Length: 223
Image 1 (tube, one colour):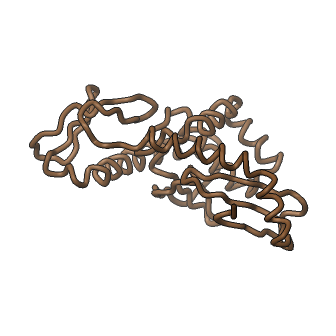
Image 2 (cartoon, rainbow, N blue to C red):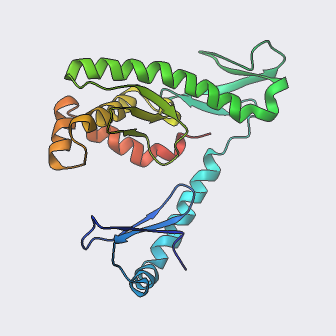
C-alpha cells in the first residue's frame, strides 16, 4: 500500500500525520527530510487503520450521494427539506418551508442547479454573519467569497479576504458562525496557536461544540 499523496514540510520537526480524505485518499504529512523507506514503514505499520478508515469514509459517501428523486432530503441551515416534486415550472428550482420543487427540464443538471442555489444563499447569509461578527469584535476584513472547496470550510488570505465553502450553508447557523469567527480570528492570529484559540474562545465560548459538529457530521454537508 502506498499513500496517494506525501506532503513534506520544513515546519514539521518530528511529528508525522496520516489522513484519509473524504474522497478516500491517503495523505501523509512528514518532516522535509523523511526518507522513502521510513514512509513505507509508517504505512505498513498503520495499514489496518488506513483500510478501516477508508471503508468508513467511502461508506459515508454512499449515504450522502444524491439521486435527485422526489422525497429525497436536502439540508439547509441544519434542517432537512424534501424534494417535493419534479414538474414543469418557470424557475429551475423553487424553495419553501415545505421543501424543494425542481423543474423537469433541468433534471439532467440537477446537481449544478442545487449547487448554484446553495451558493447564492451562502453568499447572502454568510456575508451577513461576517459583517455582524467583524463589527462586534473589531476585526476588519476585505471581502467574502463563496467557493466549491471540499476539504476546507473556510480560509483567510493575508489581505483579509475570507473564503467559505458553499457546503457550510447546509449546517446550523451556530456552526456557520463558528467558522466565520474562526476565519475572522485568523486576521489577527495567522496560525492555530494557543493565542488563536483563546481569541476564538473569547468570541465564542462554546466553539468546541460546533467544531465537533463539523468533525462528526461534515460528511453530511454535501450533495
